[in-house]
Length: 187
Image (cartoon, rainbow, N blue to C red; front, side, top):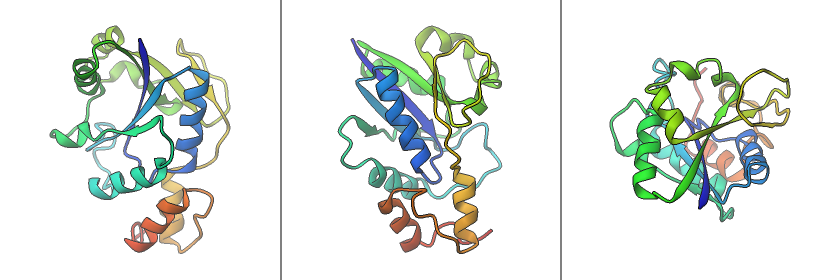
């Protein structure tokens, strides 16, 4: 049985923290592949105004190029928002019924997990693993991939708006796209 990691999010923009934790998850959780799934609109970020879906996909594609076990899947962008994890896992299970899926979530989402759409049913069709960039221990029943990484998409957008460098925070190809497309210029 193939073991596939699911890493969903707005990825606005994708950054090195996402990629480092994704690589760590592949190794620690023994994943065969990892799907990056950009959200059309996260139900937990309904007030946000992300970069367009096309630009976020372009940045993701550039960031994971050359990583054969990292894949981009646009299935959440092909249906109306908001993006619910339950719907995504169901669609993936229909497409790959003989695969096991591990849903990767940020440490900041653990407390809200029981409020997720159809959470009780979701627990029956997928496993969860936590990606923790804080390096601090917290209590929950899920396996945890831990590495202290102080990089956030919010900080990256703010640095761009202030005219500061984002070198080494995002892959060079993503930095080029942000500059070329003049993304995040407004505070």
